[in-house]
Amino acid sequence: MSGPRQVTVGAGSLADMWLQEWRTLSDTVRLGSPASRRTTQLVIHTDEDHVMVTLRAPGGEDIPVDRCPLSAWSRERLSLAVQSASSRVRGGKVVMVLSCAQAVTGSLFVPHQARSQAGNIIRDHLRRKLPVPLEELVLGHEIRAAAPGKLELAYLAVPKRQVENVLARLFLRPSDIGALQAPAGLNVRPVTVPYGVNSGRAKAWIRRGGLLGVVALMVLVAAFGVQAWRQNHVLSDLDGQVITATGQARASTERLKAVYSLESDLEQLAEVGAAPGVVVIWEELARLLPDTSYLTAFDMKGNEIHAEGLSASTSDLIQRLENSQHLHAVSLTGPVVFEREHGKERFTLRALMRTRRFPAGEGG
Image 1 (cartoon, one colour):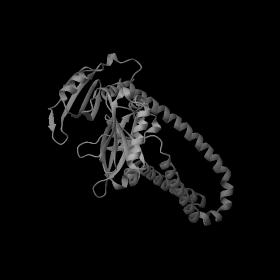
Image 2 (cartoon, helix red, strand yellow):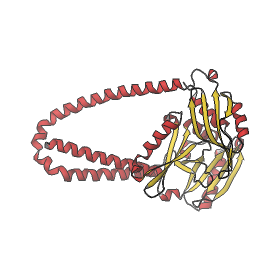
Image 3 (cartoon, one colour):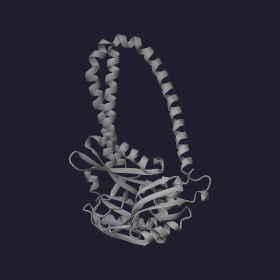
Image 4 (cartoon, helix red, strand yellow):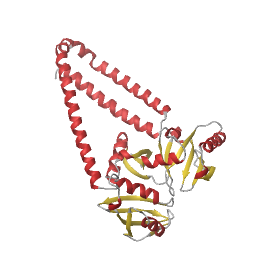
């Protein structure tokens, strides 16, 4: 193998290593340090008529701060709640958290070596599980220690439009919220993921990424400096050819990107046309499900919807769904079983979509 070829291969290997470490750092920043998980949280809960604000201490205890009708909520009231929370923690950091009762949550268990691929693993899982394009969701995850050699990837997914609607109702800006949180279950920790802009973590990420770049450059110079010096005259002769080949390769790459982008757009268009009303059905379920009910599995086949979940009253839930303008023929597909662990009834049901009522422009 010639000198220039060795330099190119070595640089490519170091680039792959640097990219792998960068992805690992990205997951670490997204997760947050142990210190960040000990930060006091100001959690905002909403239901159809009320707003509740709770101060959650690092130890897990909840302290009520405010509760009022939704019609009486304002940014001034939020400012008072923040001041009250700050006075209780005596100058400590308080992160504002928005509770998302209808968020889809779950956990995946993977080997410890898969940590750097956590984001890709979760996205692939949700792409198969959810009927909504991932681009329309707010996604996040926590990486938790599990059995020896294992990691738990606890994820959260909620429609972007739903988050934006809640923020609008509460007169909040995305930058006001530091994290989104799915409510905790019985003996189950809540899933909390960052949201909005956190400049402190971003700067730390940039600093650590810059350090990796410096280390990679030093290794590159130490490993190939002597050989590059000996082959200087060869590189000089090939310089013009490399520039020409690089330009041609870049042009070919751009053309391929355009072709693959068009193919992806056509595939997405076909998927939307094959599943009309997906977004409408998702929003309808989010609106109809009470705070005492949530789904653990959801699937759409043609004009049928199949769902599993837990509810304080399955009969009341079915009545709510029957009153939907987009669903009908709601029926149970299995027995209703009361789960003492959760204090709720586990159900499986099926419903049909009223596809002819969908506006032509919604959901495909």
